[in-house]
Image 1 (cartoon, rainbow, N blue to C red):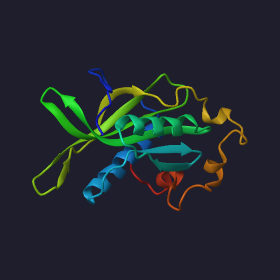
Image 2: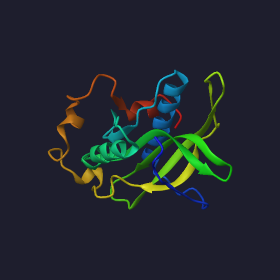
Image 3: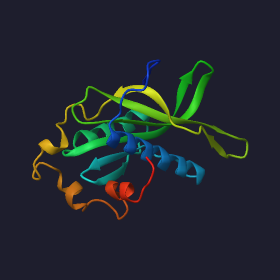
Image 4: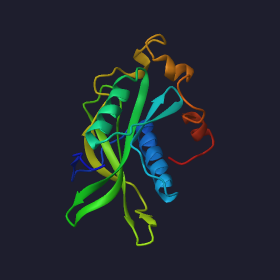
Amino acid sequence: MADRVVESSDIQVPEIPETLEKVLLFTLEEAKEKLNNGAEVVPFTALVVKENLFIESHPGDSAEECFKLARHTVEGARGADAYAFCYDGYIETDDGNRDALIAEGGTPGEEHGVAAGYLYTVDDDGAYTFEEEPAYIGEAPNFMERLKEADEYSEDDIDDRYLEGDEFEEGDAIDMEADEEDGAES
């Protein structure tokens, strides 16, 4: 998936809210694991709602369609604190295009989101080598720009599927607080 422009920046990495940072890193690690296990990275979103993380795939026939599906999902996420949209793409560098796993994300009400990613190479045997640390890529569109802060929604305003989990398979909701309690790194 490559038809996407995220403005890179030569300025310092902005302060990223902790919840957003965690969800960006989580999605990048999930995508790395998929590639390392020989699976394709189907574009997906991860939404932080209360202390849970909900994951939804956005397969499409084109990059534009994947982004529209992701935007639609995120814009309807009443009561979410942050999101990440992760996909396999490339980054244009001074040395040419480089393959990268990219996660774009944002928080409610902010004008812009952020993009981070792992640059990687693939050898002749199909093995992936990832940069050691994810890199800040730059400013990205924020699909939550028009949403209010999560705590400004009443329980009735929040979509039932996120509170009750009826439309998700087991394993789709991940307890974000459990990661913190278990001492998982972010």
